Length: 404
Image 1: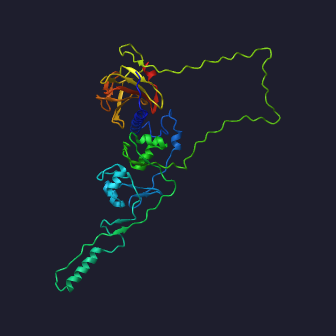
Image 2: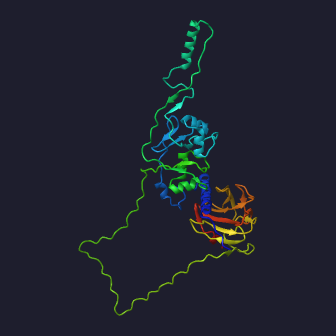
Image 3: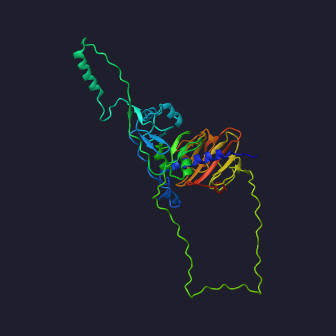
Protein backbone atom coordinates (compact mmCIF):
# COMPACT_ATOMS: atom_id res chain seq x y z
CA UNK A 1 0.00 0.00 0.00
CA UNK A 2 1.36 3.40 -0.94
CA UNK A 3 0.09 6.47 0.87
CA UNK A 4 0.87 9.94 -0.40
CA UNK A 5 0.69 13.12 1.64
CA UNK A 6 0.32 16.61 0.15
CA UNK A 7 3.33 18.74 1.04
CA UNK A 8 1.07 21.56 2.16
CA UNK A 9 -0.58 19.30 4.75
CA UNK A 10 2.78 18.20 6.12
CA UNK A 11 3.99 21.79 6.27
CA UNK A 12 0.85 22.94 8.09
CA UNK A 13 1.08 20.07 10.56
CA UNK A 14 4.76 20.73 11.26
CA UNK A 15 4.04 24.43 11.68
CA UNK A 16 1.24 23.66 14.11
CA UNK A 17 3.51 21.43 16.20
CA UNK A 18 6.20 24.13 16.30
CA UNK A 19 3.51 26.61 17.37
CA UNK A 20 2.47 24.35 20.25
CA UNK A 21 6.08 23.98 21.39
CA UNK A 22 6.47 27.73 21.18
CA UNK A 23 3.46 28.24 23.43
CA UNK A 24 4.89 25.72 25.89
CA UNK A 25 8.12 27.66 25.80
CA UNK A 26 6.31 30.89 26.60
CA UNK A 27 4.55 29.27 29.56
CA UNK A 28 7.26 27.11 31.06
CA UNK A 29 10.36 29.27 30.96
CA UNK A 30 13.28 27.00 29.99
CA UNK A 31 12.33 27.16 26.29
CA UNK A 32 12.38 30.88 25.66
CA UNK A 33 11.43 32.53 22.35
CA UNK A 34 14.99 32.73 21.09
CA UNK A 35 16.56 30.71 23.95
CA UNK A 36 19.32 33.24 24.61
CA UNK A 37 20.84 32.69 28.02
CA UNK A 38 18.83 29.52 28.55
CA UNK A 39 19.55 25.79 28.32
CA UNK A 40 23.17 25.39 27.32
CA UNK A 41 22.47 22.66 24.78
CA UNK A 42 20.73 25.13 22.46
CA UNK A 43 22.71 27.21 19.99
CA UNK A 44 20.98 30.58 19.64
CA UNK A 45 23.55 32.76 17.91
CA UNK A 46 21.17 33.46 15.03
CA UNK A 47 18.52 34.74 17.43
CA UNK A 48 20.87 37.43 18.68
CA UNK A 49 21.59 38.44 15.11
CA UNK A 50 17.84 38.70 14.37
CA UNK A 51 17.13 41.47 16.89
CA UNK A 52 14.55 43.96 15.65
CA UNK A 53 13.66 47.59 16.22
CA UNK A 54 10.46 48.74 17.91
CA UNK A 55 7.32 49.68 16.00
CA UNK A 56 6.99 53.44 15.35
CA UNK A 57 4.45 55.42 17.38
CA UNK A 58 1.12 56.19 15.74
CA UNK A 59 -0.06 59.77 15.19
CA UNK A 60 -3.12 61.43 16.79
CA UNK A 61 -5.51 59.47 14.56
CA UNK A 62 -3.72 56.20 15.26
CA UNK A 63 -2.04 56.10 11.84
CA UNK A 64 1.44 54.89 10.97
CA UNK A 65 2.31 56.12 7.49
CA UNK A 66 4.91 54.54 5.21
CA UNK A 67 5.79 55.59 1.65
CA UNK A 68 3.46 53.07 -0.03
CA UNK A 69 0.84 52.20 2.61
CA UNK A 70 -0.73 53.11 5.95
CA UNK A 71 -1.89 51.10 8.95
CA UNK A 72 -4.19 52.09 11.80
CA UNK A 73 -3.42 51.15 15.40
CA UNK A 74 -6.37 50.32 17.67
CA UNK A 75 -6.96 52.01 21.01
CA UNK A 76 -8.55 50.50 24.09
CA UNK A 77 -12.23 49.74 23.48
CA UNK A 78 -12.03 50.32 19.71
CA UNK A 79 -14.14 48.42 17.21
CA UNK A 80 -13.36 48.28 13.51
CA UNK A 81 -16.10 50.87 12.98
CA UNK A 82 -14.47 53.24 15.52
CA UNK A 83 -11.16 53.06 13.68
CA UNK A 84 -12.82 53.64 10.30
CA UNK A 85 -14.56 56.76 11.64
CA UNK A 86 -11.33 58.10 13.10
CA UNK A 87 -9.32 57.69 9.90
CA UNK A 88 -12.14 58.77 7.57
CA UNK A 89 -12.55 55.64 5.42
CA UNK A 90 -15.70 53.51 4.86
CA UNK A 91 -15.95 50.84 7.55
CA UNK A 92 -17.07 48.15 5.08
CA UNK A 93 -14.00 48.79 2.95
CA UNK A 94 -11.61 48.44 5.89
CA UNK A 95 -13.42 45.38 7.27
CA UNK A 96 -13.41 43.59 3.92
CA UNK A 97 -9.73 44.39 3.33
CA UNK A 98 -8.73 42.88 6.69
CA UNK A 99 -11.13 39.95 6.81
CA UNK A 100 -13.03 41.23 9.87
CA UNK A 101 -16.51 42.53 10.76
CA UNK A 102 -17.36 46.17 11.45
CA UNK A 103 -18.44 45.35 15.01
CA UNK A 104 -15.36 43.29 15.89
CA UNK A 105 -13.55 44.41 19.05
CA UNK A 106 -9.87 45.20 18.63
CA UNK A 107 -7.04 44.70 21.11
CA UNK A 108 -5.11 47.82 22.14
CA UNK A 109 -2.16 48.10 19.77
CA UNK A 110 -3.66 45.75 17.16
CA UNK A 111 -3.04 46.79 13.56
CA UNK A 112 -5.50 47.19 10.69
CA UNK A 113 -4.16 47.68 7.17
CA UNK A 114 -5.79 50.48 5.18
CA UNK A 115 -6.90 49.68 1.62
CA UNK A 116 -5.91 53.19 0.52
CA UNK A 117 -4.53 56.37 1.97
CA UNK A 118 -6.68 58.02 4.64
CA UNK A 119 -8.04 61.47 3.67
CA UNK A 120 -6.47 64.58 5.14
CA UNK A 121 -9.97 65.85 6.07
CA UNK A 122 -12.49 64.00 8.24
CA UNK A 123 -16.02 64.85 9.37
CA UNK A 124 -15.91 66.38 12.83
CA UNK A 125 -17.37 64.19 15.56
CA UNK A 126 -18.71 67.24 17.41
CA UNK A 127 -15.74 67.94 19.63
CA UNK A 128 -14.38 71.41 19.10
CA UNK A 129 -10.77 71.66 18.05
CA UNK A 130 -8.45 74.05 19.89
CA UNK A 131 -8.79 77.54 18.45
CA UNK A 132 -12.12 76.85 16.71
CA UNK A 133 -15.23 79.04 17.11
CA UNK A 134 -17.61 78.08 19.94
CA UNK A 135 -20.72 77.46 17.82
CA UNK A 136 -23.00 76.99 20.85
CA UNK A 137 -22.08 80.34 22.43
CA UNK A 138 -22.31 82.14 19.12
CA UNK A 139 -25.75 80.66 18.42
CA UNK A 140 -26.97 81.60 21.92
CA UNK A 141 -25.95 85.23 21.43
CA UNK A 142 -27.66 85.38 18.06
CA UNK A 143 -30.91 83.97 19.48
CA UNK A 144 -30.90 86.53 22.32
CA UNK A 145 -30.39 89.33 19.84
CA UNK A 146 -33.09 88.03 17.51
CA UNK A 147 -35.62 87.80 20.37
CA UNK A 148 -35.09 91.45 21.27
CA UNK A 149 -35.47 92.84 17.74
CA UNK A 150 -37.93 90.41 16.19
CA UNK A 151 -41.37 91.82 15.25
CA UNK A 152 -42.78 88.60 16.70
CA UNK A 153 -40.89 88.19 20.00
CA UNK A 154 -40.54 84.66 21.27
CA UNK A 155 -40.54 83.20 17.77
CA UNK A 156 -37.09 82.35 16.46
CA UNK A 157 -36.38 80.34 13.31
CA UNK A 158 -33.16 78.34 13.24
CA UNK A 159 -31.46 76.37 10.46
CA UNK A 160 -29.67 73.07 11.06
CA UNK A 161 -25.95 73.44 10.38
CA UNK A 162 -24.28 70.55 8.55
CA UNK A 163 -20.94 69.36 9.91
CA UNK A 164 -17.99 70.46 7.83
CA UNK A 165 -14.86 68.46 7.20
CA UNK A 166 -12.15 69.27 9.69
CA UNK A 167 -8.60 69.46 8.45
CA UNK A 168 -6.13 67.30 10.30
CA UNK A 169 -2.37 67.37 10.41
CA UNK A 170 -0.80 65.76 7.37
CA UNK A 171 0.53 62.32 8.37
CA UNK A 172 4.28 62.13 8.79
CA UNK A 173 5.85 59.51 6.54
CA UNK A 174 8.21 57.24 8.45
CA UNK A 175 11.89 57.47 7.65
CA UNK A 176 14.09 54.45 7.04
CA UNK A 177 13.20 51.09 5.51
CA UNK A 178 9.55 50.24 4.96
CA UNK A 179 8.38 47.00 6.65
CA UNK A 180 7.12 44.15 4.51
CA UNK A 181 3.33 43.82 4.77
CA UNK A 182 2.51 40.09 4.81
CA UNK A 183 -1.00 38.78 4.08
CA UNK A 184 -1.70 35.62 6.11
CA UNK A 185 -2.54 32.57 4.00
CA UNK A 186 -4.59 29.58 5.10
CA UNK A 187 -2.67 27.30 7.46
CA UNK A 188 -0.05 29.88 8.45
CA UNK A 189 0.74 30.65 12.08
CA UNK A 190 2.70 33.42 13.76
CA UNK A 191 5.57 30.96 14.10
CA UNK A 192 5.69 30.00 10.43
CA UNK A 193 5.59 33.68 9.44
CA UNK A 194 8.36 34.58 11.89
CA UNK A 195 10.50 31.73 10.57
CA UNK A 196 9.79 32.77 6.98
CA UNK A 197 11.20 36.25 7.60
CA UNK A 198 13.71 35.18 10.29
CA UNK A 199 12.39 37.50 12.99
CA UNK A 200 11.52 36.60 16.61
CA UNK A 201 7.87 35.64 17.01
CA UNK A 202 7.69 37.87 20.09
CA UNK A 203 8.70 40.88 17.98
CA UNK A 204 6.10 39.94 15.36
CA UNK A 205 3.46 39.85 18.10
CA UNK A 206 4.51 43.21 19.53
CA UNK A 207 4.52 44.94 16.14
CA UNK A 208 1.02 43.69 15.33
CA UNK A 209 -0.67 43.71 18.73
CA UNK A 210 -1.26 39.95 18.77
CA UNK A 211 -2.79 38.24 21.79
CA UNK A 212 -0.97 36.01 24.25
CA UNK A 213 -1.82 32.96 22.12
CA UNK A 214 -0.23 34.59 19.03
CA UNK A 215 -3.35 33.69 17.03
CA UNK A 216 -3.64 35.12 13.53
CA UNK A 217 -6.41 34.81 10.94
CA UNK A 218 -6.51 34.12 7.24
CA UNK A 219 -6.48 37.39 5.29
CA UNK A 220 -4.89 39.38 8.12
CA UNK A 221 -2.07 41.77 7.24
CA UNK A 222 1.04 41.58 9.42
CA UNK A 223 3.85 44.09 9.63
CA UNK A 224 7.21 42.30 9.53
CA UNK A 225 9.55 43.88 12.12
CA UNK A 226 12.57 45.75 10.82
CA UNK A 227 15.93 44.16 11.62
CA UNK A 228 18.06 46.18 14.02
CA UNK A 229 21.02 47.27 11.93
CA UNK A 230 22.96 48.16 15.09
CA UNK A 231 22.83 44.57 16.41
CA UNK A 232 26.36 43.20 16.70
CA UNK A 233 27.25 40.58 14.14
CA UNK A 234 29.01 37.42 15.21
CA UNK A 235 32.31 37.13 13.39
CA UNK A 236 33.95 33.73 13.08
CA UNK A 237 37.72 34.13 13.49
CA UNK A 238 39.79 32.94 10.57
CA UNK A 239 41.84 29.82 11.05
CA UNK A 240 45.43 30.47 12.04
CA UNK A 241 47.89 30.23 9.16
CA UNK A 242 51.35 28.78 9.74
CA UNK A 243 54.05 31.38 9.06
CA UNK A 244 57.62 30.39 8.17
CA UNK A 245 60.37 32.49 9.73
CA UNK A 246 62.69 33.93 7.05
CA UNK A 247 65.75 31.72 6.56
CA UNK A 248 64.24 28.79 8.43
CA UNK A 249 62.78 26.97 5.44
CA UNK A 250 60.17 24.26 5.54
CA UNK A 251 60.40 20.54 6.21
CA UNK A 252 60.66 18.46 3.07
CA UNK A 253 58.34 15.46 3.11
CA UNK A 254 59.92 12.03 2.79
CA UNK A 255 59.53 10.80 -0.80
CA UNK A 256 57.85 7.43 -1.37
CA UNK A 257 60.18 4.46 -1.53
CA UNK A 258 61.01 3.14 -4.98
CA UNK A 259 61.42 -0.37 -3.59
CA UNK A 260 58.12 -0.63 -1.69
CA UNK A 261 54.81 -0.68 -3.50
CA UNK A 262 52.19 1.89 -2.67
CA UNK A 263 49.39 0.59 -0.43
CA UNK A 264 46.45 -0.81 -2.33
CA UNK A 265 43.52 1.58 -2.42
CA UNK A 266 40.23 0.07 -1.34
CA UNK A 267 37.19 1.53 -3.04
CA UNK A 268 33.89 1.00 -1.25
CA UNK A 269 30.99 0.00 -3.52
CA UNK A 270 28.33 2.61 -4.13
CA UNK A 271 25.44 2.38 -1.71
CA UNK A 272 22.23 1.11 -3.22
CA UNK A 273 19.24 3.40 -3.23
CA UNK A 274 17.40 3.07 0.04
CA UNK A 275 13.91 1.64 -0.19
CA UNK A 276 11.66 2.44 2.75
CA UNK A 277 9.59 -0.66 3.51
CA UNK A 278 6.36 -0.63 5.42
CA UNK A 279 7.32 -1.80 8.89
CA UNK A 280 5.02 -3.83 11.10
CA UNK A 281 4.81 -2.34 14.57
CA UNK A 282 5.76 -4.95 17.21
CA UNK A 283 3.05 -6.54 19.32
CA UNK A 284 2.84 -4.60 22.59
CA UNK A 285 2.51 -7.84 24.57
CA UNK A 286 6.11 -8.74 23.80
CA UNK A 287 8.61 -8.06 26.55
CA UNK A 288 10.39 -4.83 25.70
CA UNK A 289 12.98 -2.66 27.39
CA UNK A 290 12.44 0.17 24.90
CA UNK A 291 12.32 3.71 26.26
CA UNK A 292 8.88 4.16 24.69
CA UNK A 293 6.08 2.01 23.35
CA UNK A 294 4.32 2.45 20.02
CA UNK A 295 1.26 4.72 20.29
CA UNK A 296 -0.80 2.48 17.96
CA UNK A 297 -0.45 -0.98 16.43
CA UNK A 298 -0.24 -0.79 12.64
CA UNK A 299 2.20 -0.14 9.82
CA UNK A 300 4.75 2.66 9.59
CA UNK A 301 3.80 4.31 6.31
CA UNK A 302 6.09 7.32 6.55
CA UNK A 303 9.47 7.44 8.26
CA UNK A 304 11.30 10.28 9.96
CA UNK A 305 12.98 12.95 7.82
CA UNK A 306 14.03 16.08 9.66
CA UNK A 307 12.49 19.19 8.17
CA UNK A 308 10.15 17.17 5.94
CA UNK A 309 8.41 14.74 8.26
CA UNK A 310 9.51 15.41 11.83
CA UNK A 311 8.11 12.11 13.10
CA UNK A 312 6.68 8.81 11.90
CA UNK A 313 3.18 8.09 10.60
CA UNK A 314 1.59 4.82 11.71
CA UNK A 315 -1.51 3.65 9.83
CA UNK A 316 -4.25 1.62 11.48
CA UNK A 317 -8.02 1.30 11.39
CA UNK A 318 -10.10 4.36 12.22
CA UNK A 319 -11.04 4.34 15.89
CA UNK A 320 -7.91 2.45 16.99
CA UNK A 321 -6.85 3.56 20.50
CA UNK A 322 -3.90 5.95 20.60
CA UNK A 323 -1.80 5.39 23.71
CA UNK A 324 0.83 7.37 25.58
CA UNK A 325 4.29 6.20 24.53
CA UNK A 326 5.71 6.94 27.97
CA UNK A 327 4.51 8.18 31.35
CA UNK A 328 4.29 11.94 31.69
CA UNK A 329 2.04 15.00 31.94
CA UNK A 330 -0.31 16.32 29.25
CA UNK A 331 1.32 19.65 28.42
CA UNK A 332 -1.04 20.86 25.68
CA UNK A 333 -4.12 19.93 23.70
CA UNK A 334 -4.64 22.05 20.63
CA UNK A 335 -5.32 21.82 16.88
CA UNK A 336 -3.69 22.84 13.62
CA UNK A 337 -5.21 25.32 11.15
CA UNK A 338 -7.48 22.57 9.79
CA UNK A 339 -8.85 21.88 13.29
CA UNK A 340 -7.03 18.53 13.48
CA UNK A 341 -6.31 17.82 17.18
CA UNK A 342 -2.76 17.61 18.56
CA UNK A 343 -1.74 16.27 21.99
CA UNK A 344 1.65 17.04 23.57
CA UNK A 345 2.93 15.03 26.55
CA UNK A 346 5.95 16.19 28.56
CA UNK A 347 8.13 13.43 29.99
CA UNK A 348 10.92 15.48 31.56
CA UNK A 349 12.33 18.99 31.31
CA UNK A 350 13.11 18.69 27.58
CA UNK A 351 11.67 15.42 26.26
CA UNK A 352 8.18 15.59 24.73
CA UNK A 353 6.02 13.38 22.52
CA UNK A 354 3.46 14.67 20.02
CA UNK A 355 0.34 12.85 18.77
CA UNK A 356 -1.51 14.37 15.79
CA UNK A 357 -4.48 13.36 13.63
CA UNK A 358 -6.52 12.02 16.56
CA UNK A 359 -10.04 12.44 17.94
CA UNK A 360 -12.15 11.44 20.96
CA UNK A 361 -9.51 12.81 23.33
CA UNK A 362 -9.78 11.20 26.78
CA UNK A 363 -7.33 13.38 28.72
CA UNK A 364 -7.10 17.02 29.73
CA UNK A 365 -4.22 19.43 29.97
CA UNK A 366 -2.31 18.80 33.20
CA UNK A 367 -3.38 15.16 33.55
CA UNK A 368 -0.79 12.60 34.60
CA UNK A 369 -0.71 9.68 32.16
CA UNK A 370 0.96 6.29 32.27
CA UNK A 371 2.76 4.46 29.51
CA UNK A 372 0.20 2.55 27.45
CA UNK A 373 -2.77 4.60 28.69
CA UNK A 374 -5.34 5.42 26.00
CA UNK A 375 -5.39 9.16 25.33
CA UNK A 376 -7.44 9.32 22.09
CA UNK A 377 -8.43 7.35 18.98
CA UNK A 378 -7.46 7.56 15.31
CA UNK A 379 -9.55 9.88 13.18
CA UNK A 380 -11.81 8.41 10.54
CA UNK A 381 -11.19 8.58 6.81
CA UNK A 382 -9.36 6.67 4.11
CA UNK A 383 -5.90 7.46 5.51
CA UNK A 384 -6.34 6.83 9.23
CA UNK A 385 -2.95 7.21 10.89
CA UNK A 386 -1.28 8.86 13.86
CA UNK A 387 1.56 11.30 13.33
CA UNK A 388 3.97 10.63 16.22
CA UNK A 389 6.93 12.86 17.11
CA UNK A 390 9.63 12.85 19.76
CA UNK A 391 11.01 16.29 20.59
CA UNK A 392 14.20 17.10 22.46
CA UNK A 393 13.28 20.67 23.31
CA UNK A 394 12.50 22.40 20.01
CA UNK A 395 14.41 19.83 17.96
CA UNK A 396 12.68 16.81 16.47
CA UNK A 397 14.50 13.48 16.72
CA UNK A 398 13.91 10.11 15.09
CA UNK A 399 11.36 8.24 17.25
CA UNK A 400 12.48 4.73 16.18
CA UNK A 401 15.54 4.50 18.49
CA UNK A 402 13.21 5.23 21.43
CA UNK A 403 10.83 2.48 20.30
CA UNK A 404 13.39 -0.32 19.83
